[in-house]
Length: 449
Image (cartoon, rainbow, N blue to C red):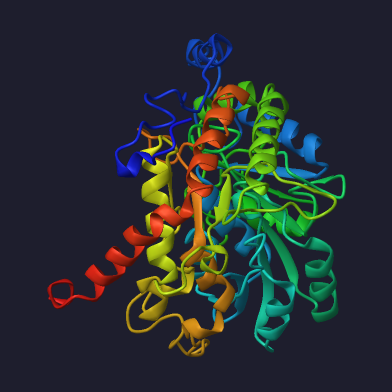
């Protein structure tokens, strides 16, 4: 192993692109899609009552132990469906995580309700139950618990809080297909759950979503929202009567066919992700200055992303900003061929849509008659902000959003990554001058201009 870091002119650990992209498309997947197209004219290609769509819904319900699954055209649509199914009304408040993809919160706005953000656990990045309780008011109706990066949230504590306050629990399991919590599958841990079938997820559509629940009334509301507010029944002539406000959230038979075919290999692919992640976690845990995300006891992450922190408190320098240190480490790792970057770049409530309180114009829903002005003061989320300042994830070098621990990458690629981490994190002192120079440049008058 070269002693000089690549960022200083040394030879990189990984000198070419050895990483393979996700998803894996097999001949069986292609045939499944072709079979649907070949049946056009005999079977529907669209709508929520197609044969393949129904087959996928039934298979997913059986897999996670739910009575009902409804396929939608995106994971975001599935989340909005859950908010609707929960009976959320204008001005109601729903608590979700301050560190998540924006859809975990905008799905609340979609139904004229108000997102309220709770802080996260610094180690797992998941929503902190104690912070949830601090944000409950008389207007709170539900909690959207995000299983971030595929790691199930602390559902025992969340469900206990929800039961005590009579709140509905929605799992945002968009990144958690196949994850488990004390031997129970993600998606079966709250009152209802939502999954994404986007092409970067564990189960691909390549677009689509799955909404799951047990309650008949909730499922009825979900079906109305999915398709124009109409009741859909294959055995009854269509009324063309919108009974409530509905969207067009149906998917297609082609998406369902690909997802159903991929479902047959989900466990195999997840096992490979978990094996890859376990190897990396073991190697990185031995290194100073890097903190791979731990798995709480009894929890098995699905590892949609492999995340880690580089806290300044464990660095050989203390006189530079945390963000500068993170960026310096990232540059050193990238120079070695260890491709790393951030996923989210700010805490969710810092995004403009929440800071302006203007989702629909005229300040709605916060300033509408049924709402209230909710403060999104960023000092309320110290752990989420610390996560943003410290964390990085592994990405494919050429294709945005592909996770390097995903198959077909295996232990050979993981070993190369680990060697790159080892080279950088055993020579952190060599990065100190670079970090100080970057900090000085940021503070210079020219930078300010």
